[in-house]
Image (tube, rainbow, N blue to C red; front, side):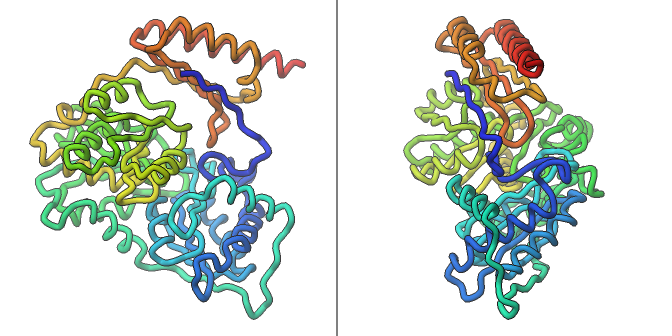
Length: 460
């Protein structure tokens, strides 16, 4: 399969909200104020409650202290009451937006990016991420300017003190009350991010013995050599501690990567396979369908076929997975990066909820993680990121023709995917087939050609 795509650089929103370098890109206090005024005016009264309100959560980045009050100022200026939660995972913000009957939810986070970046993810009253049309309307309102509330109609702001408790009670519901996680020893890496409090608390309440790391945020160490983006330390500690399982969450805890007892990393596609097999066995997998993306490994697709389960591929991004799941009433989807969506329980990817479910299945299996959590052999896959590339190059005839030539060499059992990142300044190259040497060679050919074309474009 071939996919060549490009982004509209004029659009404020990417595939996962707004994201960029703080005070160097589009992420500034002024932008946050303007966004809040525009979004607040758009959502005012849409939840049908007497006084419109917005829930605002954040991760542990230093810039959260700048963006949170800017959002509060913007929302209250157009008449919305603002509820702030402090550090809280993205899925918690999605959940609480819905159960508190807010018109809108905002998560201040750049997910797995370094602390210098930050961003804003917006959720509607139903707890789902906003679709492109709503985001475009908000951006248009930012251009046209807001209608401010009269003095008597300004909003108020307050802090929600029990947000962590409300969320922890919600995610524990994925296990029947008759079950717990006692006798399980795990290593939990919270990435010095949004889950640094709630993660250890939930595992303690469920009876697991947890060795915790990445739970000392200082505003600048989120995702720094830890968490789902850098799970190697977690994996090593898992082996040293003799733990049953290692768990690494990312900065806003909407994705999770695991390690087995031997310190070997387990990626998202393997976890999807385990969940799919369990859900089919229990008649919980509607239409025998799992939703993945263009990046989902062929090995997973082949494994699911053996179980009489089909794989539907969407564009990259958990929002597109969830849109398809909701539209077609599918119950399981996810990405290799560790975004796992269980639509019966959550409205977005939830790393902690997924971890609890996997711990439960592992305990019931009686097997080692190395035996239970690797049900298939992945097809060799190469991923290469190129920085500072003019993304329009991907639509050039020279690149398109090169992809066709190389795809013919791979045949029907291989794939090439070129795409610009929707959350970072990157062009991504993915090549996949059963021959590792062929994968490596084609990846280097694609990278070399793109870099050469980029150099020519810059010298024009």
